[in-house]
Length: 341
Image 1 (cartoon, rainbow, N blue to C red):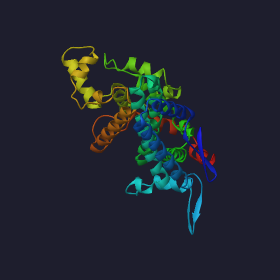
Image 2: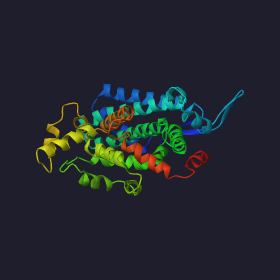
Image 3: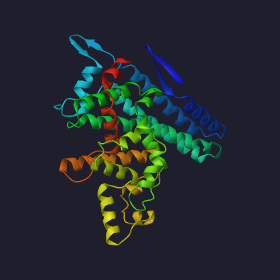
Image 4: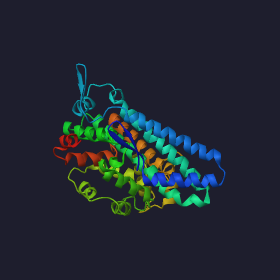
């Protein structure tokens, strides 16, 4: 790992794999005399390192701090985040967390720049899949953060569940600069990685074959969720949106059309042919992890609109339902999370 020491804490700016790719790219560009590209890589890397060092100067989110008569701890942070009377959570998020999110986005942009470079240089083309994997990890971290925030902001959720999500969020903020963040949402990463590999067949529009495909890539807790008594109509509809890359309303319209035409199945071409250029089907092609974030964001926006308008269909994303189930199964999780650091 590329580590820098700031105060009493080592921060991990680049993994060994990332450093290897950066070195290979820089060396190859140097041999080709591509000075502009070398300068771009160097400047962006330096900016990331400076941002990482700045973030590390802020106090630990998980530790207790006192300034004059005021004190702060992870417990007080969780309590604040879970309050129902705060106008907007963004005004109560620690500066370290705000800068950390910017760091994640900056790193995604840096890695995407590397992707463009390796894709255009024959000797480096074999690195593209590895760079895409690294981009996906950073995208997944941002998405996991948003899942936790969605759970916390839902005042209808049980208090303990919201508190558990808040502790996970705090740990994600604290460890964003090292690989430890992978441990906090392995099942979410598994679900998203599986979705990247899935090209929906549509067929009978029941999603059995697609569900079978993605389930082969996800840990056993996924099956506990699917078999849970808590799985209701909204959870099933959220799963359908996730699998088919369509809104609940589009799925209903397609099924109605199949019924009116006496069709028992529909081809991918027929399903795509019914959608306009702004359909989620067109936005997610599987070759760019950032498109999966767009799918998640759109599903989240649509779900919130249904909840506020009291419309039929999922009121949360599949990811929200899944994490709520897992957090509800974790007795005493919040206290354990705080005490391990």
